[in-house]
Image (cartoon, rainbow, N blue to C red; front, side):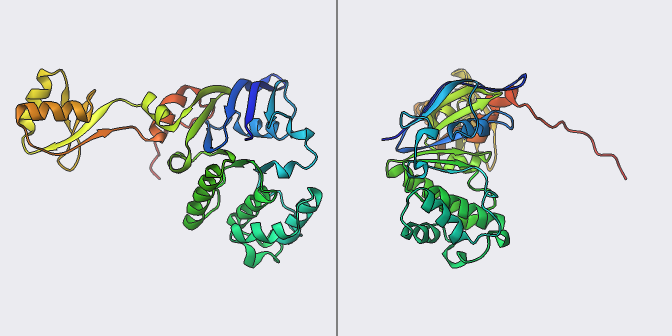
Length: 309
């Protein structure tokens, strides 16, 4: 199995430190979401991993070696960083054929990845005629061309229609289930929540979190329970005696801060209070992410009142 090992990685551009002593490991067999605000260092880290930039200090090893030391890198690592990278005058098929020849990949593989990414029917069209979503699919086809053990994707859902978003989500899961190492950079929190097993979060070039999705959300959530009952006054009184607060939520439900569903259920049962609905409430990935990165956002807009015309 092939992992990505980032060790004490630092990258400076003049006086700006874009990546600051990062250390983390991306394991095979799961999809790792790579998150952080604009300017956090995600893209720089990916470019360092692929040998496009040189680190100021530290290292990124893929399968125990720097990416630049592999003679046929597409056989080990597939990457999508820029969907605009393909030459516009080439056809999609010719673009992939050039990559296949350079990495001694069988020509038959070109049509396989064109079909897998849904652009087989337009393989003979020039790339400059492609929409952003079609270019995105072509970039993903290039990443899959060498049947790699490691896949790095930067904003893979960008430009895709709803069907394409579902497709790329399932593709990433399939790759992970097959034992591949999958690292996906994204700004779409709700979408990341649907496919990531593990999260690596950066802020101002530093590592803020390296943990599983459930543990990340739990660590940055306020515990509460949601309940619906026909006797809210009795339940409020019982919860108050137990040190909890019952507050109205929506659709006749009530929210109990600082309590779990088990706590509320046990108390209601002891008091003989009927419960129609009961569940634990948890922050979304977006809410947990914003709670963690609020002080590490380099670019943040401020609300300015609109003036009347």
